[in-house]
Each structure stands twice: as C-alpha cells, then as structure tokens.
Amino acid sequence: MSRKRLSSVLTMGLMGLVPFVVAAQPAAAASSVTSQYIDNVSNLLLAVALPITIIVEGVLFYAIWKFRKADEAKPTQENRRLEITWTAATAVVLLFVGLVAYGAMGSPYVLASQEDSQQMMEQPDTTVVHVDSYQWSWQFHYQHNGTNFTSENLVLPAEKQVVLRITSRDVLHAVHIPALGLKKDAFPARTTYIATEINEDSVREEPYVLYCAEFCGAGHSNMLADVIVKDQSEYEQWASEQAQQAREEASGSSSDESSNATATATNETAMNATATDETAALAAPSV
Image 1 (tube, rainbow, N blue to C red):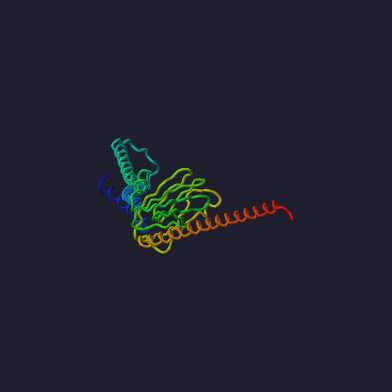
Image 2: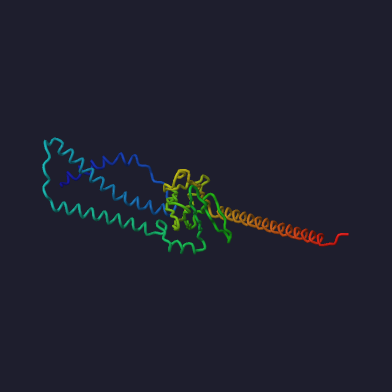
C-alpha cells in the first residue's frame, strides 16, 4: 500500500472514530484497589483496540470508496506475505491481552485465593467480615476486640485492607458491589473470599448497594443490602459501639437466665417443702 493510500486509510479511520470519542464520557476514578486493577486492564485493552479499529475501519472505508463504481467483485490474489503479517499481528495482540489480563488476575485483590486470604486475615490491621447469604437476605458478622456482633448493613473502613469471607446457607448467591468493583459467588458448603482496600474518596453519607448477582429464587430481586464506607476513626467508633451493645445484650441474657434458674430452684424448693408438710400431716395420728 502506497503512502498516499495509507494516509487516506488513516484519515478516514480517524473520521469514523470521532463520533465515538466525542460521545465517550471520562472514566471515574477508581473506588478501590480492585477497581483500579480492572480499570487498568480496560484502559490498556482500549489503547490497543483504538489503533486496530482505526486501521480496520480505514481499510473498509477505503475499499468502499475505491471500488464504489466496480461492476462486479474480482477474486483476491493470493498474498502469503500479507497472510503471515495479519496472522502474526493477531497472535501478538492475543498474547498482549493474555499478559495484561494475567497481570491483573494474578493479584489477590482481583482473585483472592484461600491461601492469600488466610495470610491477609492473620495480619493485625486487616478487617475481616463474614458475609452470610441466604434466601433472600444477608447477614454480616464482625469481631471487634474479641467480641462478635452482627449487622444488617455491610460497613467497611476506607484506606484499610479488608477481607470478606463469603458463604451461603442454601443455594448459589453472589456478592456484587458494582460501585466498588467487587463481585464473588457464594456457594453452599464452601467459603470464597474478596480482598480489597477502599479509597478514601469513596467515603460518603449515601450508602452503596450490594446486589445478589445469581438468580436464587422468587425473592432474588429484593436481595439487597446497604454498603456503608467510613473513614478509619468513624469505623472504629461504630465497631466499638456495636461490640459494646452485643456485650450488654449477652450480659442481659445471662442475667435473665440466672434469674429464671433461681426462680425455678426456689419454686422447686417451695414445692418440696409443701410436699413434706403434707406428708407429715398425713403421718400424724389423729386425736
């Protein structure tokens, strides 16, 4: 292809790409480490796809314009050099896509293995949340200063490593938080993991939404939960308050159980005393 033809191809390709560039919206900043990895892969693939799109569309427009007055199509002559070129170019593009995807998927923040997650959970600064899914709701279990408590909302700290332990009581579910770039299936009798770190810019008063991304029955569309991201100080305060409330409830339950046990023992003692008095009265000789 001559320089003149190549220039025409690139010009027409750029003209065809202009509407897409104008219509494209600027990408939002990554909300978490996981989202950042995914966005990087998308941006790299887009950087490769755009020149290829320009060349392919340019060749197409050039062929349409060049042969617009042709009466009938003529067979293309064999060109081994051209075939080898586009085969090698395709192989290079596929290899690049594979390497880029592998670089992201190899990160524990994208695909967290059990070993990686266990190592993270052993670190003292990691926040661990057990996500329990069932038809058709969620429960989130925490541990703070040795006290376990449960929350109806998923509350996460920003700028801190987080590991979600995901289980299912019944059927297949999926944790999906699109705004934070998080998604993982929940299997019965199996634990899966999400590891991430949320950026400080993602802290806001309005909660994010957690969806179930696997059809799980009649109530699937209502299987939602609020995801609240707090800064570290607010999260620590919230966790301390929830743990204190759990301790008070546990203490109150223990007191009630002790009171019930004491009352039961007192009643049994009184009944035994009454029975003894009745026995003694029957045994006494009548006058």
